[in-house]
Length: 297
Image 1 (tube, helix red, strand yellow):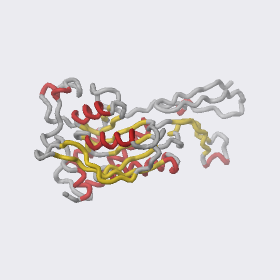
Image 2 (tube, helix red, strand yellow):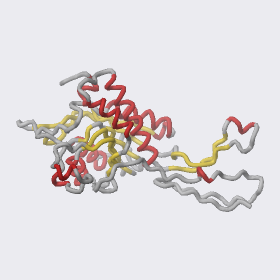
Image 3 (cartoon, one colour):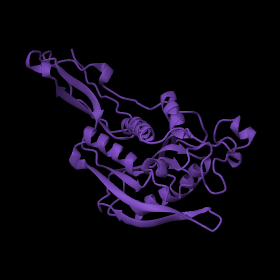
Image 4 (cartoon, helix red, strand yellow):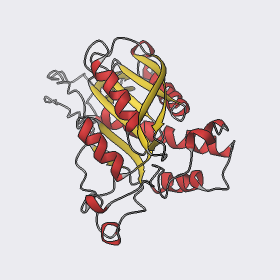
């Protein structure tokens, strides 16, 4: 006798299955009746909204990205591969899920040839934001993955053109907008911001400010996606937008005190530092926007 089964869909929607009490109805494989996927992460004290992935493969590729010997076209290929992996982790962990009954090619011969289990909810509405210029390529990678996983009519890519604003000493004082191509409707959408370097957070904060206050509707969730972040970035982001979810492949805090480096990140937050006086990341990678575009202007 088959019994009720209500799959748990962690991180997304939950669909209650109807009572199955007819012996001829195929049994649902319990292995795929629920999903609790979360990527492996390093331990820290920054809070639940910050996810720094524990991924030795990504760290290996990222070390090559940061090497002074790495230039185009290898640099671009490595960033592409890193963002493809990061995007997969974010989509799997953050987007809603649903239960489906999906026949395979074998269904013509075997009535059991139906995948009955969890997938990403294809009707999820999502936007990826390309922040020129370092974020242009990463956003395109995210856009392509979203179009594969979701219904394409539910996916949009926006473009924002801005640059860091500095004072006479070279210190970052904010972000200067130049232009934007943005769809008006943002209500209920998952908004992803793939931008390689989370340094001060000035550009990201400015972009999220705009999406929260100047468009139609309220986003379901805003998610920042980075190759590297600093303690300063996390602090500034949490002060400005504590609800934003942050994902990164590496936390760079190379200018911190010895005591801070010997402790779990966030334990001695006031002693952590990852930025030079002109707001470049240490260890860092140098100018990623320049390297991606072979343009030092």
